[in-house]
Image (cartoon, rainbow, N blue to C red; front, side, top):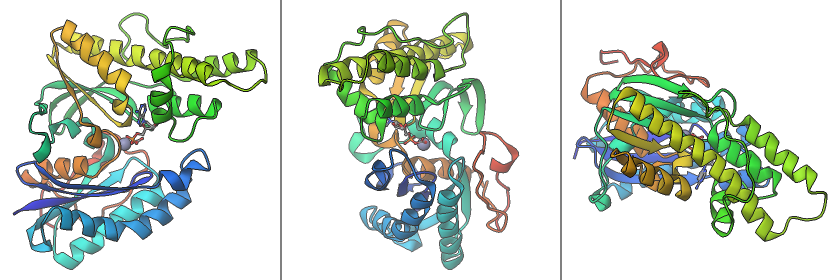
Amino acid sequence: MKCILGIETSCDETAASVVDLAGTVRSNIVATQIPVHARYGGVVPELASRNHVMSILPVVREALVVGQVGWSDVVAIAVTQGPGLIGALLVGIQTAKSLAYAFKLPIVAVDHVEAHVTAALLSSPNQTELPVAEPPYVAMVASGGHTALYQVDAVGSYTVLGHTLDDAAGEAFDKVAKMMGLPYPGGLAIDRASREGNPAAIAFPRGMMGGGNLDFSFSGLKTAVRNHLANRGQFPLMNAEIADIAASAQEAIVDVLVEKTIRAATAVGVEQVVLSGGVAANQRLRDRLWRRCTEQHLRVILTPLEYCTDNAAMVANLGRFYYLRGEITSPDSLDAYANLRIGSPRSVRAREMP
Ligand code: KG4
Ligand code: ZN
């Protein structure tokens, strides 16, 4: 069976995946470093790189075993070249280069955010009932490093409709959680804590909601939560209060993400909306976007949870599209780019074999 091996090491997940040439995920292995970074309250770049070095080969091996394929089935290696932590990216890139050299395989370098944007194009053998997106669509990508709206006309053809001017939505979740003493990663902790809370308990600000604006700003929310905590004094937070603050802060983020996504779809006139990125795992966001899209008669594709947070299936699948078009990357010039942007010249692949 011909397949693409995907490798993802841009942040704190060491991931490898096998996706066949029809786009079905055969394996999706993620070795998370959350326990390593949790006691520091955030990702420590050097520890991330070291842990990738230790995990990458076992993770690749497991992806092949679970996918029931051997090296002779792999036709190309797709690897994340950015954006992300340079040291972390380099581990995946060097692994891809070495394996490509050893097994005489082409490499397809992939943009991590573009992989999130196209993650909803994946189909999984045990999730056949889930709808798969088809361009054109508007994609809301909300993660720890990025929050932006894209118009997706085809794989490789994107228009940025709006993006965050300061923090990413995931960063806002993480910082608010940290202020309340909730564990890292904060998004998941807030998602859980908020289930017992009242989303209308505190009126936190919704940044840049005026006019037809499609950009985002979450720094005001962060300041508002800090002020709220400072004003209530030093006594310890009770669980009910944590739940209310978590639910109210989450509601402020969700309101903005949902309304701007609907606004973007209406502005460009597409009928399909895709939600992806780590924050897309948020249950309240999924429920609210689903309801609003249904009201607006928009088709909504909520990226399956396992492809929302960082994974290599989305990398392998995006690599598959480019491989099938003959767009591969010269291994000699393949490098890591911390600030890679969708559509930038560096992410454009060469059209010849190495
Ligand atoms: O896409 P991702 O795994 O990594 C980046 O590319 O940044 O996103 C990680 C972000 C973190 O900020 C994390 O707190 C957030 O996604 N996140 C969530 C949830 N699960 C992860 N945010 C809200 N609710 C969740 N359930
Ligand atoms: Zn990501």
